[in-house]
Amino acid sequence: MNNVQHRPIVFDLHSDIISDIAIRRAQGERSVFKTRHFPRLSKNGVMAVVLVLWVEPHHRQNSSIRLLQLLGAFLADLAESSDCVRLVTGEASLLQSLQEGKMGVFLGVEGMTFVEQWPIFTQSKRTPFDLLSEQLRESLEILQSLGLRHAILVWGENNQLACGPGDSYDPFTSAGLTAFGVHTVRELTLRHIVVDVSHLDERSTDGVFNAVEDVVIASHSNARALCDVPRNLSDAHLQEIAQRNGVVGINAYSRFIHPDRATLDHYIDHIVYVANLIGIEHVALGFDFMDYLPPDLGFSEKTQGLARVEDVPNLLIRMRQRGFSAQEVEQISFHNALRVFR
Image 1 (tube, rainbow, N blue to C red):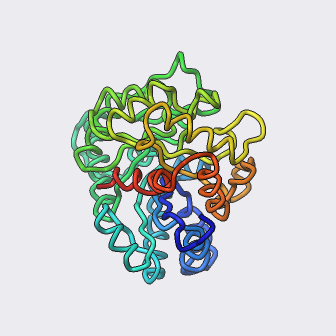
Image 2 (tube, helix red, strand yellow):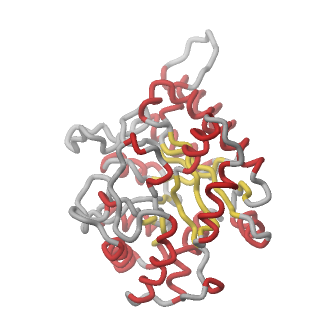
């Protein structure tokens, strides 16, 4: 395992690198992914990743505009980095990229509040539901034509689709998945866009499972049985994901790993727990590393031994030491996530 040549390929199901790209390009930098991110990721084995369009909280009131800014910055930077990275939409294009030595990037959205703010210029008389449906259709057509393959309905907040466990979360008053949220989840499924329940509260997650029978994932969530916070998943929801042949990407953010001082071994505890509960074929990696985000957003807590991409090789080594076979490590680090995007 210490031989780099035999290190498994890592597929990270959740990264906020697009936010860093947008901020740096606004300050005049170019080829941000190629110069800043590709060297770090590739050196440490991460050659497949879901990059999300995440509208920061201070842009939430103009989320559709900010989403388009993020998207424009990402696509421009991707074009400048085309010799080392490719936007992919499925297994075939990802494997082709890897064969060419290029990183494969899937495009996702983390929070869909932008739908309710999407500009529709019309004077026809329609119900609010019909107007939202048109805004959903138009926004998804644009995003999907540019490669969108993954969607999370909320990020912490409540919106017209669903509810998330934010700071004022009350599980007894949550409205759960709305009628428009049900429509959205079904539309995403019809378009073969992977539905992700990370960031949804308990009732909204139930609503997603009731709305569709297709594959559902949690890209960056952990086991509530080991760390009892609303962002983590109950055993019942973990089992529901497995029944749909989905995966759970284990999150490296300390608040979701351990109530006190989270460590690398605590992270592996979540891998072990989820694997034992629902099967190793449903466990993946969704690191959610915070060093891609500005410090003023407040995500300062770090997991000892797993705080950035440079720690990933040691994670794989420690998994072997904890009893995972080489085949199981490869399954968790790459193949399970790949299956979702076939």
